[in-house]
Structure formats: structure tokens, C-alpha cells
Amino acid sequence: MSVDLSTEYLGIRLKNPLVVSACSLTLDTDVLKQLEKAGAAAAVLPSLFQEQVEHDEVAMSDVLDAGTESFAESLSYFPEPAEYRCGADNYLESVAAAKKAVDIPVIASLNGTSEGGWIRYAKMVQDAGADALELNLYQVAADTETTGQQIEQQCFDLVAAVKKSVSIPVAVKIGPYFSAMANMAKRLTESGADGLVLFNRFIQPDFNLAKMEMSPELSLSSPHEMLVPLRWVAILYGRISASLALTGGIHDAEGMVKSILAGADVGMLASALYRKGPEYVETVLKDTARWMEKRKFESIEQLQGNMSRQKCPDPAAFQRGNYMKALASYTGPAI
Image (tube, rainbow, N blue to C red; front, top):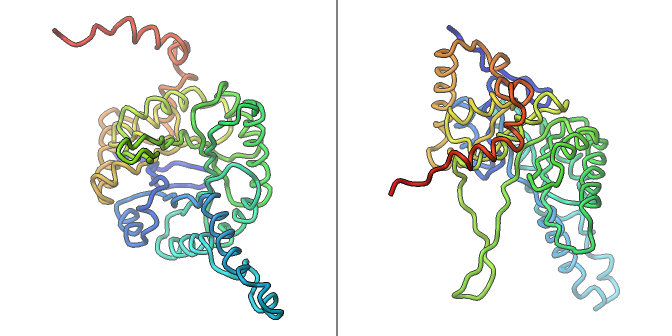
């Protein structure tokens, strides 16, 4: 039996549901070619960070302003900061290089919290050739005076503004830490999001006791991490109009199959590819097709959402029921 692995994500028809998530691997065009050859259906480039752009522009402006009052002609001697290259210029070059290197869809990524220059940069990545844009919303609500409602409204406004500025599809990547996640997903879709990527991995700082300073801690994901996005994809499937991508914790065909069963249009991988190399894409796809053939599933469309909340005979299992069952059934390790 021949299995049809094709799917649709953000209105783009893909040959299969395996998308390489935003990571440094996709920034290397040679690696990107290897990923395409192994079968990856699309790739998300690493994010261009709002802080990175702001830092580069401020630093360049400071350098150009230094000494401008020393003599009269200095003020007109230096070009405007916008004429100089910064992190954004390099990123746009990376988008163009990726598009030139491969035939699969290339998705650019912007990581920020406010409208600011994002509208401008969203247009730029579109002009550089990106097939779609992933807007990565990452914000720690540390201000004691800022309410949850204000934070959410900032997200909606940002998505709406970016969506109005481009014609390419826009996916929104968020974290799970909202008080009403289902409503948040619905309103992001209403704000214009063509897709939701669930979820962000928050890089938490640690204390370096030897140096008495903060230090960022980055570790590759584990399969256990996919349980949170798996649950929320299953809850949202069929209830919002946006595409759904599951990212975080997919390490093999089993994880990919679970993602599709929950209702995801695509599953995104990165950590597994760091560990096993670009060629591992082929293994995941072959094993996924083999699993489907064994169970008589002929297509991704036939498989998708079969274990979602929408099709579950006991929807409460996705809410409080599974919490009670898990606690009640745990007996602890053998002594």
C-alpha cells in the first residue's frame, strides 16, 4: 500500500508533515540542502531578534555620532545609520541564500514583543523571498503593573499589524503560559494568524555560583516535552481555523504520528537532528509511513485528528480527567 504523506500548512501544500523548526541548522545552506535531500518538507530559519536589531542600530548610531561636533563638516560627512549594514541585513541575506539553495518552502522567523520595526522587517523578509513568516512571541511579564489582559492585547495588536503589512502567510509561535489558552488561540486566529506553532521553549537562566552571575541554560529537548503541546493541539483541532504545528519533543516517528493524531498539520524537529544529523529526516519519514501502512492508514488526512478532543469519546480526558487518572494510577517505583 502506498501512503500519501502530503499535508497542508499555512495554505502551502507540503510533500510530508516534517518541518525543520527554527534552529542554527537551517542557517547553513549546505546543511539545508542535506535536510531537503533527506526529505524535509519545509524549514524555519532561526529568529531575527528584536533586541539584536535594536542593539546593532543603536551601536552603529553611537559610532557614527562620536565626534560629530568636532568640526563643521562632520555632520554631513557621515551617512545615515540606515545606510550601514546590521544584523537585519545579514538575516535578509540568509533568507535569500536559503531560497536560492533549496526548492522547499523557507519560513523566516521574527522574535519580538512590540510592533516597532517588525512591520518593516516583515516586509523585508517577504521581499527577500520567504514563503511564510513565523512570528515568535516571547515575553516575560515581569512588570507588576502590567495585567494579563494588556499582555494578550499587545500580542493581538502585533499579529494584526504584521499580518496587514505582508501578503505571505503568518504563523504565530507562542508559549503555553496563558490563563485561557484556548481563547488566546482563538483570538490570535481572529487577529489574522494563519497558523499557530505550539509551543515556544523558554530558555531559563541559572545562577553561576562560582562567578556570582546569571548564566543562560540551553539543553536539547526530550520526548517528554511534547506532552504539553500534544494536549493543546488535540484540544484546539477543529475548533480554530488556523493551521497547527507541534514543536518541542518530537524525536522519532512515534512522536510524529502522535502529533498528527492529535490534529497537527505538521510536526517540527530540531533537537533530534542535532543529535543524529540531517539524514535522520529520512528515517523518521520512512518509519512514519511504515507505521501508517501497518495500520491501514492511506494518508495524513485520514490519520489527522483521530485522537483529538473533537473525536475523543470522553473529552474530559483532555481536561481534568487525565490529571486524576494519572495520579490515581501511579504506584511509584518498586521497592
